[in-house]
Length: 211
Image 1: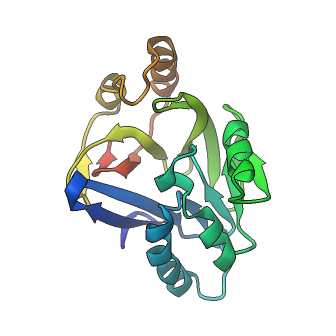
Image 2 (image 1 turned 120 degrees about the vertical axis):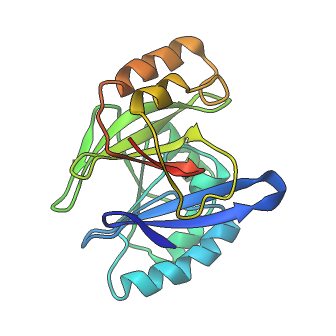
């Protein structure tokens, strides 16, 4: 666990057999929001840490970028311990989360919509995620300039508390067919993201990026 950027906490698990690091993030404000749950095993390790950090405070939101084990597998377990938290996700992901019984309630967002509180301003973008191209969401926290890239920017290796210097345009150009298999949708996503100007990328896997 580390304060990886400003008031953003990173929780990491490295899995040696696949040489991959999995991250979850907590924006530690008076309205705490967790980005991704990890799978069930990762969530069981995460909950005690969150309880220590949050104390008597609630966890307000849990952002789920798309329906995959490391993004939402631990959601029902987290909600047992933080029952007031509400998942934020796309309409497609909400149907999956409720259909599989992971939660009964979601806040759904469409690309271009925002969620604004006293502590942060989240803007959401379309994410045609992975093999099935399910419509998920990517998010930019605009006040700090933090872009949460989910699986879009991806590197192997042990990467707890690791940050690389990079270039935003280069990262966007390097999005591969493994990240977005449909060429037309990939190009549209790249065009959208190139209009942004983040300071920091909180990745789902691998080092975070200063851009």
